[in-house]
Length: 325
Image (cartoon, rainbow, N blue to C red):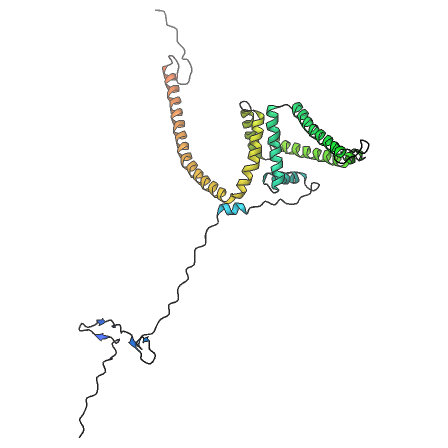
């Protein structure tokens, strides 16, 4: 009779099962099981009940950065519409002026600005006669030095005789064409007349009050210029106008959204304040008007009552003669 051998107790009981707690409706969390050493493989393996979970990282979307106003201003470029002078002369002149002050072509705008300011600065210290004579002296003197140096170089370095020495400007001097093309002169004269005509039309519209708003703005501007001209030199006023014309419109177009938003906010605040204090002012005016009327009525009634021998109707009563006793 064989001995009954009790079965071996498996100590690797699943410890990851929920252990009942003596307190009802309460459970003990599972106890973590240490990894066992696998002899066949030779590495530590996790217990069979636990599975590695692969966590995928969540991509965080960066908030879109707002548009930098300086970057937007760098990318700004003005493009003028293409308009023919014969089709619409006022719009054509306006487009050309906007092309200059908005710096559509930077070289052309810079040349015009520097030339205008240079003329204003030179005429501040020198007369037109001095400027013309000085310019002729400078150009002629430099050219005289160049021509004579070129001739002496041909004589001593090239070994040419005096008959073979030529002026470096001989081709220009022997040219038979005119220096001032007649077609260009006629075109310039016609363009000048058209420009003067357009300016005269616009001034006439302002004077005859075609548009109240434009005429009011021009009236205020002319009055300011008239007042400032008493204290400031005309050249300083013209220089300030030129600098403002070449800087303010360009800066406004580069920061148009920012300026428009700020102006809208300030206009709204001004409207609210005007409505608020305008009502108070109207009430105050009505009150003062009533007080003035009552004061005038009291004065007139007092004066009529104080006048002797005057009835309420304003007639003087007749006096009967006394009878002789």
